[in-house]
Amino acid sequence: MRATFCALILLALMCQAAAAQIRLKDLVEFDGVRGNDLIGYGLVVGLDGTGDGLRNAPFTEDIMTNILERLGVNVTGEQFRPRNVAAVLVTATLPPFARTGSRVDVTVSAIGDANSLFGGTLVMTPLNGADGQIYAVAQGAVIAGGVAARGEAAQVVEGVPTSGTIPGGARVEREVDFQLASLSRVRLALRQADFTTALHIERAINTHFGRAVAAMQDSGTVVLDIAATRAPTAAHALSRIENLPISPGTRARVVIDQRSGTIVMGEDVRISRVAVAQGGLTLRVEEMPQAIQPNPFSPGETVVVPRTNAEIMPQPGTGLAELQGGTSLAEVVAGLNALGVGPRDMIDILNTINAAGALHADLVVH
Image 1 (tube, rainbow, N blue to C red):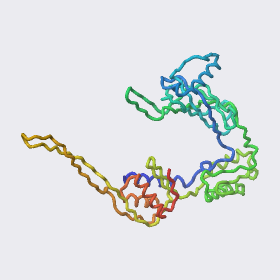
Image 2: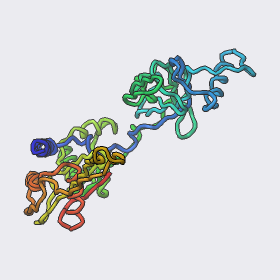
Image 3: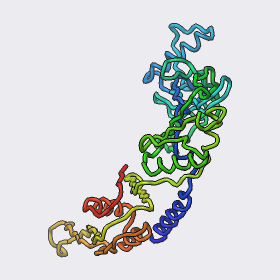
Image 4: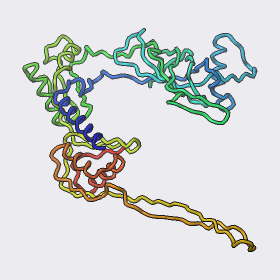
């Protein structure tokens, strides 16, 4: 347990050193330079009997019929129920400035009762944008994200075999019209809104160009005047500033994932002086039945008399610990580690400290 918290302290110190100077492009998004989500509905074929049961997924039969009829095969009125096909949703992100003919990765997910997409091939599937237009076409062999095996009375599943990817599986057929060169001003949107970080970005850009070319609009936006930079185009101006080192200002935050028991604390987390008592009870119930026999040569039957031993014991490591006013993450963790509790109990402790008003940080619970 102590080794775990020592590793957490070391990780925090490493993050502190690494976070001293961050590149500008890792802190902001440039206005207009964004991807676009695509989605399509297709069919995966070639499965080894792990596809949709067509009785339970009639939409799979519909799309299969449509594909075969487009290929000149008339199956109207025919009764065929193969188990080697599966209906899927295909999703992808069209990256900014993607050109016709370039390739993007796609994700394939089963929507019927298929058991696995392992070994399947996605048939040509158009991918539509939010405006209903086709921007890419996907096709290729599916790399499933897991494996499943079953027998007569049991089955085992590793990963998620009903979902997979096709690296470079979609070819761009339509470009998104965006003229970056025509922009006279570009907004830099901070991924984590913070007035201090926005001010540091403004000062770093103006210092780099030697004049006022950037202005902080609010905690999440810095506006760059392209004309004032005297760069030939907006792309040239952005290329000159995207690698500028910035010292970001971050809010103190504690993030808790209750499902996995993961706790992440920022270096700026502080606590007021507080005493914490953590403990629990262990209930042990032991059955010790006894058999009672009648006297020799006397009428009667053997009777089993129930005997139960029940006791309640406190868990080891319980007690009262005092956490001094924390001046660093190391002191906070060391104080909590003095209780000798696990991560699950640590979540309850942090929630209680926050409820008492002694935790000076944003507590985010997932």
